[in-house]
Image 1 (cartoon, rainbow, N blue to C red):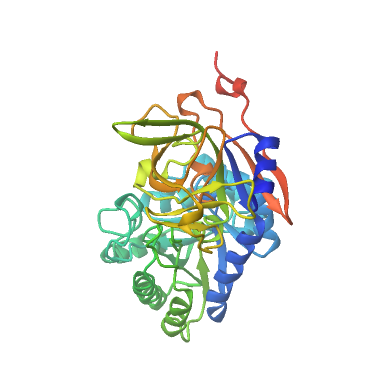
Image 2: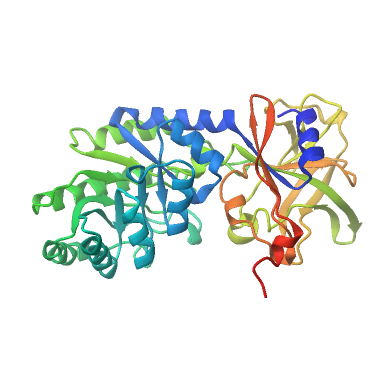
Length: 424
């Protein structure tokens, strides 16, 4: 994205604004497909990562299904043009109303990770006169490999069954006439960059799948979940897709069944950025603060997870925006180094405008910034707009898609009136 285009986006749509690059998204999709193609992997996009209709329509066009975790997400997927048979309904707390609505609209698969949720699926299936295809979610017992809030495969997690609980669940499932246990689902966390936990989980999942099949259940699908990370920090290494692909081929050799995946962040994370404007530069004993008009209301990840998002300064008198990876190295977005002698670099504590001391992005070395300058908050395509809030009565930003060098509005900025809409 060149500065001229970004400046045009800022003028047309205001700041802050979410900017999603279609080309990058499709490149990520092709990389993931290439990784799982040897095992005939099927993709179900984790809608929670970025639920924009434009994203869903694009992914459906390229043969990707949807993984939903709420009745609302099911409805969003259907609104985007998905059919029920292309949707996998996950979640540990589905309500009777959500399940009933999903069944009436033909949703194909339902995951469950508690006995009462299995009973619920059976009751709704009976009421609707349809046997529901289900997958049992099992904790893969993989050591924590991510932030505690993102780790969901351990013993203490609210998600899934422990392996030792499975016989009891199978006994119950045999007694139920309106659910068909036909698969295993595992997912142990998000933003994982190490290959080893994925291979350990895949090996575990196949073992459980085969054990349940030997018990006489018509097993069809092995859902290996998502969690595939992207390099946010300057020190992060890219995810090793080739090593993981080789490992999957070895572990799943001779496997008879469908293999499902739920990528989210991997597809949209680095395809999205937040274009923001400098609203204040404050210097004093506490340091040099660069205040942007985007903060934790647009990207809560730094405050919630201690996440790091690179900040790129946008210069309109050059071909690329110049920015920083850490305290010392100045580089442009395409990773081509720029001599430090040409740029006056200053240390900034980059923060947002929200009335919370946790509303910050970290310390960066940037070219001298002034009020009105533009900056990019990188790698904000996943779990930014979907987790955006109106805290401090801040309307949520517009969202645009860059397609063939042109910006298209895919979500309008919230109006001020929307802040009290529905109130009495």
